Image 1 (cartoon, rainbow, N blue to C red):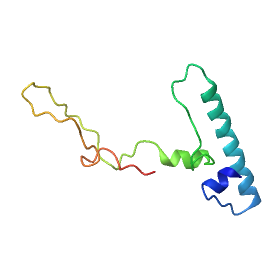
Image 2 (cartoon, one colour):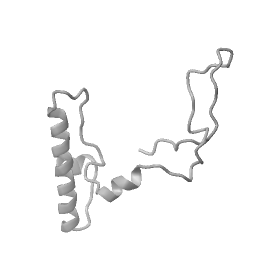
Image 3 (spheres, rainbow, N blue to C red):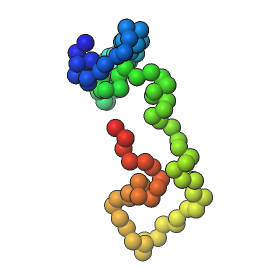
Amino acid sequence: MAYVSKYGKTYNTKTDYKMRQANFMATDAAIKAHNADPETTSESGHNAMSDYTASEWSNMKGYDSSISAPSKNFAEYSENSPHTDEIDWVSKGKVTPVQN
């Protein structure tokens, strides 16, 4: 319930609540396993997506071919070429802005 309260979650039916609770519990188990692994150099935690379904996760990731076609052109390196420390891939149409 702390998760539901923290992220302002609402569920329309008892069935939906139970399904989301099961999703949360599976995510919780994965987080605990990750954090218990002594070989891991990072720590995981919950967020507003911890109760998402596999379908909801699938809709959030993956390649979107409508953004732009892959380029077959490759640049060659030259010491005399202008250099920049940053590349804005969003303005180049290669990725979308951060969604969440």
